[in-house]
Length: 550
Picture 1: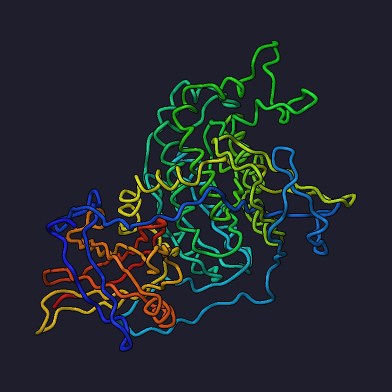
Picture 2 (picture 1 turned 30 degrees about the vertical axis):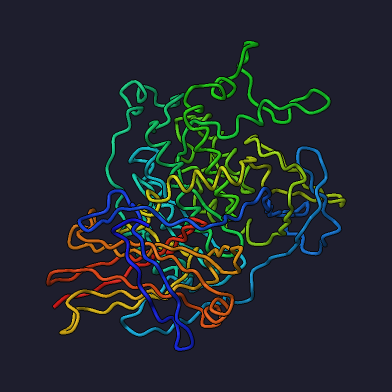
């Protein structure tokens, strides 16, 4: 154990005492009080060589109405042409009334527990990283129009994307509150290198004018990954309405080159018209995609694990810029996540409404793949129903990334991801649930004390050979003053818990695992970002609080 680590005994309940060893975690970009060290490792590690593939299926009849009377026996699912056994089957439709939790807490206690429970959650992502100011203003007006004319029946959250991910409003059915949040948001000004004098020369069509950059493409992919990690804590399907001009990048080139047994392409693409490769085919082998290949696979995997279907809505509407390649990206992201793309239309508000309606009634099929060779290649999924006159749309595949390799890659970036989630304007994460009490300085204690009560059912425990249950989590508090871009103080430590069987059972009944942090602040008002990171699964929970130091 590192020389700067310390042992602490917390009384979790009056019935038993749990020994918790606190050792620091290295978190980059943390402010003044960041502590560094090694994280203790357990004697045994649980390993897995399989994964659960979750596929949502939207089924409609010839008139576009949902089909709601299918059973598990009606569905067949194939992976790369091989039948799979459905392990779990369920049908989802909106409840007559959305259930909302009433969480009554004392003024000095906060929680990151979601306030809504619904079979479907909706998210609008207002993308100002890709596109130009004209399209951003137009898309914002259309978003306000949608919120003014549509009734919100299911929980809806709105995020903005620029250089990072910003939560404009958390999940709610209050359309007025959502409109106010969008009205208050002003996209930061930016200059796109592609938006040149030459690209503006034509009043009718500007082929190749994508209004984006490689940096913005990478930012978008990283933030889609971060959003998926944020949404993974919410149950059920998440429909992500991506209001964007997108970018010209084929996210799934592996499938475009696959052929079936008859030698025909499994997917179609536009030809150049001169017998050579099309623009899309050239893009599949371009250096840009190779730079993003690993990131694209990670994003695809994160979206599937979080149960997210993407519904891109073209913020450019019927633009004079054709942007065919960027629209291919939209179609691909919709197709391979089980959503639909809305492009080449000026009724953006209607496109957003159709997106919400489309993903509200669906079936869920889950299976463990027969093929356990995790080679990182794209695997196609095909779902069929033996009933004439119906249409299906669903996630059409996933990358077979090795679960152990994926876990290692996530572990390598866990400090960076955790730091990003603790930024002042970052959305709350709910994969790990907790309550936290904030106690201002007093005559006995001259520091702000934050006492976490973490829900152990959201943590990953490892069963050791000696019968003990082992877990480790990082509890963090970051404090922000007037400058919300840089925290002025932090306290980050990892708590390691080693329970006997009896202690574990009692702790689970009490439904909390304790963790305490102290932070020294001068007189003033502060925003606090609170975070808990499960060091076994790399899942996290975050919340915001405020405190005034007299």
